[in-house]
Length: 256
Image 1 (cartoon, rainbow, N blue to C red):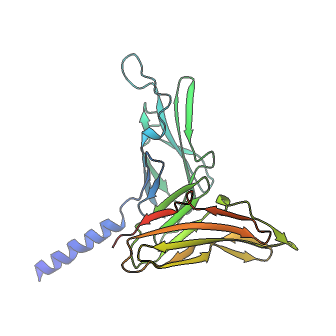
Image 2: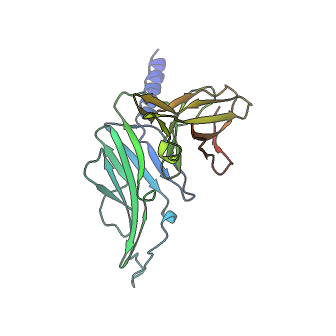
């Protein structure tokens, strides 16, 4: 009995540790992003940034030390801007872990600088945007398609388990014809799994005379190992635009 109780205590501790693991936002050298698990208010997030994304301004001082600094910046819910050191000479004294005291939008961007030189990694000035969920929120795995042609996954996509597609309509802003003030345009997502199963659905909703984007849920087949997606925007004026990764489609891996 004592051995059983000890085992149960150990398992409980393991589960608790897994639940409190700090999420990591990774900025890869190939310009891809990932968010290891949902961001939750009251927790924190670690930022892992590959310094090769900003190779400029690399000045070396006479003593061999870096004469440049790579700094990360962030703001939560439109509040005060914070910063942390990423590489080069430290300037802030802060490590790449951001406290998340409240829910809301989190924006992150980066700057490399040396004397007379600076460069930015800020999604063309719109910043990289993430969502901090209220405490206690159950968040499924999500694929985010952000303005500025940024795509990333939140959590792990798994076969047989629903995931969310969160699409920013600013990626396809052209076909917006109105009729008597009402929107006559739409944006749809199309998806196809490696099993052959496929489908499509709107990523918008209408309220009065306004159409806006909404996250949608997709459920993969139990045996699926990958999914590809693309998007179409059209209106009654015969305007058609596609977001399809230059016809290669967006492809994501599903875990068993």
